[in-house]
Length: 339
Image (tube, rainbow, N blue to C red; front, side, top):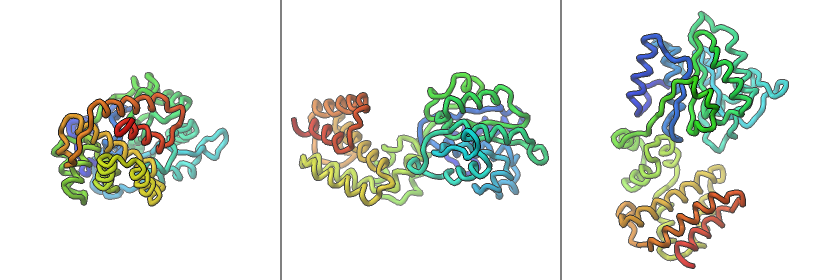
């Protein structure tokens, strides 16, 4: 992965390349921004620029297998659901390479935590110089999932970084990072794709005009979310929601959602999220009298739409009660259609 394969954030790309060319690259960078805008891919592109030094030969060797990761002097830290097999959960070589298999996994395939033992392993590897004393890069994906102990361990090495070692952290929630970690990084806020970039991205996705329009609204400039949601028939979901709202048939909607989940159990969380996000897009555009975005011929009372939004906020605040998705939809539908 290098900058040639990426869309967007060209100004930041230019800044990073200038740092590398001039030899004044910050020893630690924090890439912040909303979920799915490509922070991790951007971090990998930076790492490749640093270690490959614009060498076409090294670019061609880029891969995600363990040997090539070592050869390119790039170390990865990604959320994992397991502890290391060493004493007190410290990672060893096998534990580390096992986590690399999750590099391209979606959010359903690994638990979100970065334990102390993982960071301790990375630190132990940095004690040794690379072959030919080359630059090395540590990428910490979703750094906000580091435990407090892991963050404190990382902080120590950020305060006194080894020579020719660079750290790149990515996060969608920097509030969960220690302020002292943030202060030791050069922080850059990444943006989503603009309309032109999004259209270019959409041109590679096989869907009709309505599908592209809806995916654009759902993605909100995020190529990662767009790719994730494009695997599902968002128009079919929207049509099912519209029909259920128009006919006022809650049970029909629940049956449709259950069928979607049953045929794709591993993506239950994403499916429920897509249904809910499309539902609220419908409410929003109906509320502002712009139903043309969905081409549906129903109109909802504004006071009922407001009531649904209020109930959603109430349910989010009281998530401690752990309502089932069926109950959540029942509450929303009841306040929208009847009662």
